[in-house]
Length: 110
Length: 406
Image (cartoon, rainbow over all chains, first blue to last red; front, top):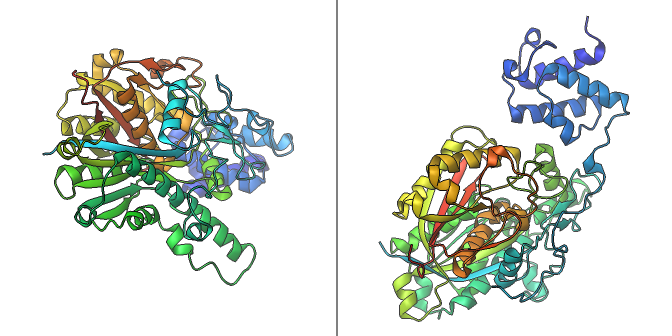
């Protein structure tokens, strides 16, 4: 008997993808359920709303199955609703030259 | 069919306020990507964009004029002015009737719309500024340019997401080539930095939390950019006859639709558009010496584009440099095609191919010569500029340096 969180995740997936609930079980991959990459992004949105959590982009990239989604949601809930990730610490844009805040006027071109 | 020359270029962007600054920074590999300041990014997963943060309207428009102009239209007019000045064209009533304007933009005056709608929804005001519609409409750039010069010929705006200004450029090219007009102003503009719009991009999970690394194995997505690039086009014969400076030649335009997925690109569609551009230019793949890639640095595009380039160029790809200047000017959305046309035209003109910046690690699925991190001297006759938009609408422009014999 799946736990409450798993039930809710299955329900969100079935609802968002308009699939009969009995088709959406924890053993299924996204491919088996006909869920493509854009659908996957939409599902993350639905899960964030359902559980009031924040799913970071890196976590999103590795989710490929219903079980991945259940595990991911549980991990985030256990961490208080969000996971630390690179995007939460502002990263300075990487540039070999100093940042172009004042683009060099009239720099000689070969 | 008449050959069509490019006789003026204007660019305003995070890379600088003129085409000259844009080119100098491109060639030197100086990126315009920086921390976004015009929006509060504290609740956004990304903080960076190619934003022209220091931009103010004062050098360009009176306060009264700017009442009528969203930021995206300001950019359009400024870039058009620079191009027209460079062209040295003399306006006559006859020419004004025989001039066309085709611009591109994804979202038009969405900053104005955003502010106005907040007044209504958030601040519960019962009225919105009466100039909202004329400022927001996607054609505002084309209209304002026509008013600036009294141009009364065919004028319109094309919207095809990230391919908008490439489609616009191609359409303007064909208008001149087919003799519908004798002069054209074309290009695109975009001002995407408003909070909810950035949130919309965040939701797609394709925006990088650090910077834009096209084709690099460790790339993490795209970076948005703003600005405008505009060009003047005219029959090559006319340009030569009046002693205009020929900064380049537009020699082909190809289009296709993927008919595949609303966001994921399809390499077959892209290859079809590149072949169409070369067919329109009457050139063989082996004649192309440089490709300015769509190169958004998303996982999907860079792989798909590499497959498309392999399909199109075969063995020749091993000798064909392909770089993405989005690594420096960001993804200008409706202005992207035009910014990249500027990069390509100037690369041919100056004999320097701009680099793909921020490149750290080769990706076996993007195994091409991407001109990593340092620009390269090369005399190239023909180049392609690729734009592969959401919704699978592809536009490819073929440019030529008429002074180089292949």
